[in-house]
Image 1 (tube, rainbow, N blue to C red):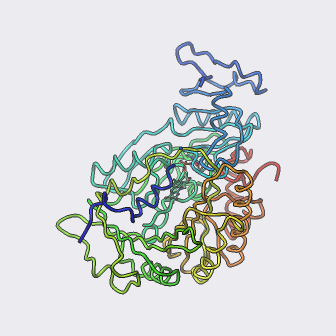
Image 2 (cartoon, rainbow, N blue to C red; image 1 turned 45 degrees about the horizontal axis):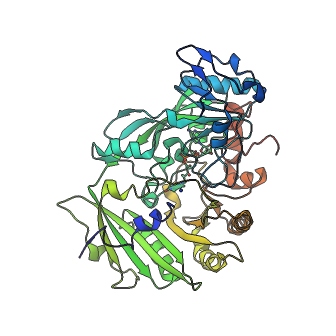
Image 3 (cartoon, protein in one colour; image 1 turned 120 degrees about the vertical axis):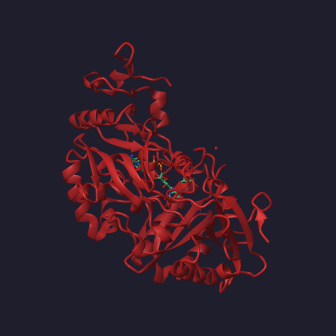
Length: 487
Ligand SMILES: Cc1cc2nc3c(=O)[nH]c(=O)nc-3n(C[C@H](O)[C@H](O)[C@H](O)COP(=O)(O)OP(=O)(O)OC[C@H]3O[C@@H](n4cnc5c(N)ncnc54)[C@H](O)[C@@H]3O)c2cc1C
């Protein structure tokens, strides 16, 4: 018997929806063709030497303050200027200007990373969201501006019964933002990350050149931009893969009595791929115990429908306690309307080697406590095969399988609690690294260049070569600013 989604709370949608809890333009006036720059003197840089832009450059305090915020509310770096580009040419001009003046620059989508990754102190932030055109759509691909939200991509694709195979939980994120770190979902176990589903990019390099790249053309640049954390180029357009969309999603929320049974079944499902997506949720209870759920999905379109008993056979969930819910596809993939930037959120995402994952998670859960590593609202686990990942800078452990361990920290306004969570994150990061694990850059972890060298391992040389070639002035300061000037 299937339920409608309105009647129950035991669903992935309800898990992830629980996340959602809270200027003056100074620029080139296209009419007068004059710069409006009252704050310019304060910045010490003569922006008058910039050629006219199609968009606007903002130097006022209110805008600069606004771009010193992000989802995590931990880091606040105030830029000297904010570019809202009216064209890719604008980005190219401002990159050339920044290089000439030695100003650092960071692209920004929605600012939904937790640790200042889209901020740059005293530099220039490029707000990619002013460029969000869908340029073309075909049977298996769509060409979009990097500033497009995934919601726009999905709406446009669904109008043709198509969809990207991998979508983030929050469709407000930008295409360029997720392609810069990887882009994962419960369907990653079948399709890899979003970066594995890109045909071509257009980027602006640190020289200000506008370059089209792909596996066939400037491959080193293509592979440095995908999951490259904005270190070598700004992505301005992407040609992304589309697949046929099913009409509906059936979601199976399966409660488990304990972690070993949950981990065993998660790994088994990653192996046999009977579902279209799988992840697990672990929730803390007031008495210090945890509740465990496996959430699996199956896509379908009438007249076909999923065979529940075949899909659930052999799984060790608490029989009789499962919930099976049907959604329209478009409704299922868009569970979070908007997230306000209000409190500190030092979230953490680790990729744990498959052989060590069950013990690692079992040891960590009891330590996610206020007086130890800090609390979490919930932990989400993903079960992946290494063979699904193809991009060199998306770092996963060197084992056939791995488990994604994502802890969504309890939001807080108390700096001391944030500090404790950051130390906790660092401890978990090191513990996982000593097991051969890596991390997903959706993470608030204090890191050094040495940490990043270890993270990239055998790909470090590739990244450094691309950095020298495509950003020789070292102006891109996106992400963790791996090549920061003070390091
Ligand atoms: C509620 C929520 C749900 C999430 N769900 C998922 C999920 O399901 N899957 C997943 O993988 N991640 C998820 N994330 C993490 C998300 O992938 C990252 O937060 C994503 O990078 C943010 O996208 P953004 O558009 O906000 O980019 P920003 O945070 O603005 O930027 C991300 C990084 O990329 C750089 N950057 C941005 N645009 C460009 C560009 N065009 N060219 C080069 N560099 C650029 C920035 O400088 C920054 O370092 C989630 C985050 C939140 C807050």
